[in-house]
Length: 156
Image 1 (tube, rainbow, N blue to C red):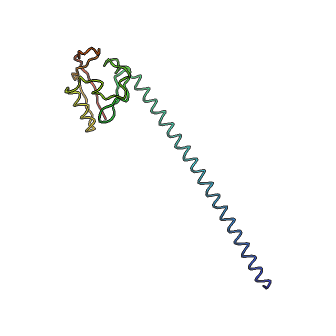
Image 2: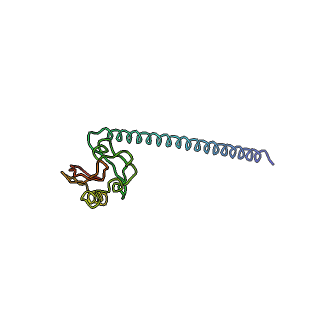
Image 3: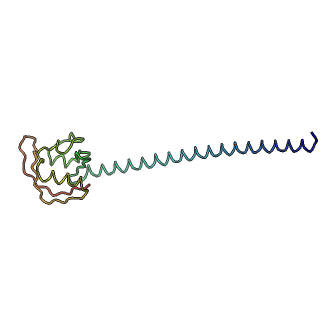
């Protein structure tokens, strides 16, 4: 092989080697960048989750301390998710109602207007504002429902 061809061959190998090293370096850099971005995304997600949990706790605390009756019902069975102390006191129940459906907790509203109101709001999403609505409740848990009039808002 002549000297010129040998230099070309050596130069080509050198360029290929350099290109290969540059490609590996670029791949390592891209992988490192991807890992860094994943860590930043995970950190951002964790921060967002922590903020959401803190806000949920703040709202829960606000409901629990409110000077008004508040209950949160979920799903087609209207399951109690939250009931603040004033609500529990007025209706004569304890926190044992949480996780139970409204008609399981209060069988007496069955066939009363309040039953239709609650289920209608759930089905339609339209809020209801009631003024002095009669509800028969067994607040003393003695089998004798009493007439109670409530002014309230039901919203979905």
